[in-house]
Image (cartoon, rainbow, N blue to C red; front, side, top):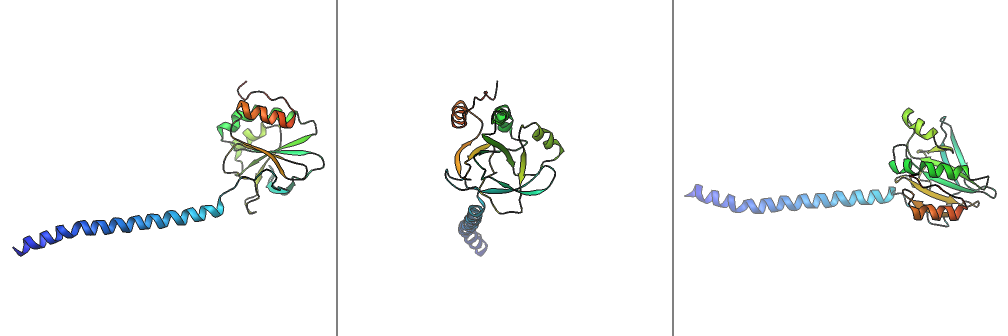
Length: 191
């Protein structure tokens, strides 16, 4: 009889023990998710607002030199194109962004930016762009241009302030907006 009572007591306590274990796991998951969320808020790359200053960037050239790239230019806008050698949307935009660079006629400069150093395979892809592509110097704290999503296109005014920005593959609407803003004619990415 006492064995039967012990089994019943044990079976009766089992749901309480399982509930307590479940609550502990939920509490641990909540704590873990909030600590990750708060740490990601610190490192999240925020899109610069139109009007925000981007005076210069610390970048690494294709031959490995660290340089400061001024974005304040005398009378010339800068088009920053954030890309990745493995980004399929960047590949789709390549013909269009190359055409944009070729139509600059000294009115603006086009500069490519990427987050990671290019390996030998990536260097082949990057060499097919009609403008210089730099790696952002990872030793310098966040510089105001987010590199976490590609492609992104920013126009920086001669005074070093963001004048316009677009995200993603170039849709018809985006192409029209870029063409109108920079006074160029752009081919469709898929033409």
